[in-house]
Image (tube, rainbow, N blue to C red; front, side, top):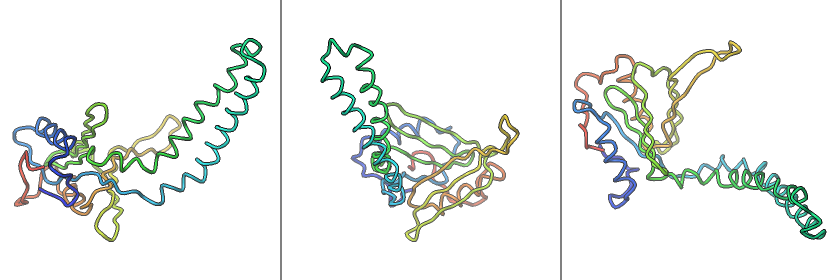
Length: 211
């Protein structure tokens, strides 16, 4: 099954994920739906800048002022304890830079994340420094919440575990599909297998290798 969001065939990362999917599927397993995570930026994610910009600015200012103060005393006068003050600000700068880069993470992940719904489970294959495969069996899939945009793209949140934490409070573990091009198709595929773990009779489903 091809979707509008499929990366070009020349994309080496996408090719590696497709090969990983071939290896992951069982001989009798059928792919009901698949979709690539889109690289679209969400304007709402830039709201983090309200906090990230002052955090990073203050961290940089603190580190520079502390370094200037230590430098003015000379290396011998400062000692290791003196240099600990400016070095203390480096982790906070790193956190700030991470928050500033967070809204661009979807673009970085484009062509690196593949979601697959088979006749018995839901998979997420992601390629970073190493290949990571997350599998959710059909019998663990609970309530689904679809967030869809006008163009049909969106996210699908699946409740896969409901329990209680150490304080006895209700706790839900979710598995998120998206942002993908055909989110309604993803929900339809999940609905087919959610109750019984089997595709609906007569459903036209591509076999392995169709991604």
